[in-house]
Amino acid sequence: MQSAAWLLMIAVAEIARDAYGFFSFSDIAGTYYPYAIRMASGMAAYRDFFIEYPPLFVPLLAAIGKPVSPSDFLVRFAALMVVFMLAAGVITTLTAFDGRSSLRPYAVAAVFSALVLALGPIAANRYDAVVAFALALALLFTMREDWELAGIALGVGFALKITPAMLLPLVLMLAPVRRAVRALVGFSVAALVPFVWVVLLGGQSGARLAEMIGYHLARPLEIESVLATGLWVGRIAGPKLTVATNSGSQVIVSGPAVTIASVSTFVLLAALALTFALVWRRRSTILAEPRLIALASLATMLGSLVGSKVLSPQYFVWIIPATALVALDRKVLGVILAIALLMTHALFPANYLAFAYDQLAGPILLVIARNLLVVGAFALSLWYLWSLPEVGQHAAQHMSASRP
Image: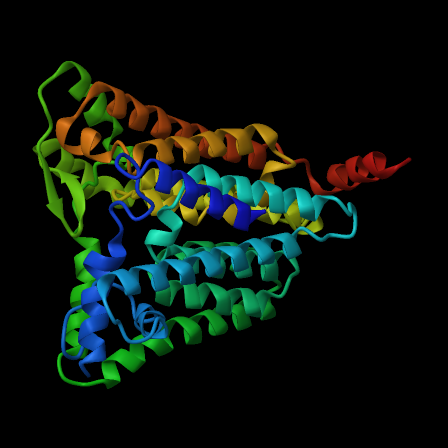
């Protein structure tokens, strides 16, 4: 099913090549390829040149093979990302096998494929498909109570793109104490070994690794972020916003944007703290019903999207596994997120320049509506967590529902 979705995207891109290209605004040729060229010449990432990504991006880049040309590298990298999305879909489908419904896994697979199609080719043009794969593995292990493996999967995700670490508190809250400690050790080893490897390269490796971390911490307010929505609402009736390119993305340059970026960390921590508090409140209920772990994970990821000063289209790739697992039980939430992904696809790549630089009303309203949907989805996921019954009531409801 997902292969059919990818083939359809390729066919549409071929037909509408002028307005909509499969590789439009891809990071592969412009960003990843120069890194690959340097590595092929014998240079080591971090030691010999700065690289903006965490350490496990380097072996991923090496796995593509020696770059022959930008176009050849583009196709090979995109093909590998499609493979990772296919693998993430398989893992998510396996996670859905819970012994209750023989049709549920296939329905989850269909939803996963539909979400990939809704978001469009962005998953093939960044390396976030690998992050989605790591998150899918973490969901599989967590929902099967393989806590140690879940910690390792999240550690690998951290060394790929930092943000998967946001799910670690869920594992530590839900696992028994001794296994939570082992999960934390597994996370720490998987997360830190790649960083230690970089430091051991010598030269400027340690300094450039610290520079990479500072690079991301200092990023300004990105134009698509939920926190920037108010500025775009003001733009509808006011003057154009000043947009510049910084850290490889488009950002808003203004006093209010600087203020919003400076408080974004507190907003993010508040969103995650509220989510974790609700999970802790119904910890026993969630453990009694493993499907609810996917809901808790999705709420956490949505909280990170709402509270972050940076929100790029590829970040929505991360939520596809959890959304596919939740959508069948929480249909309204699933529909809201599917529409949000579809709106992201409508913006990127075809209307991105009209939004960022021309600042036309249509694309601006599209982003505002998409961001409001993301906020609504986060609020709804919190409501679902708040509304969970106590474990005794939950067991009684489950027994009643399972009677013929």
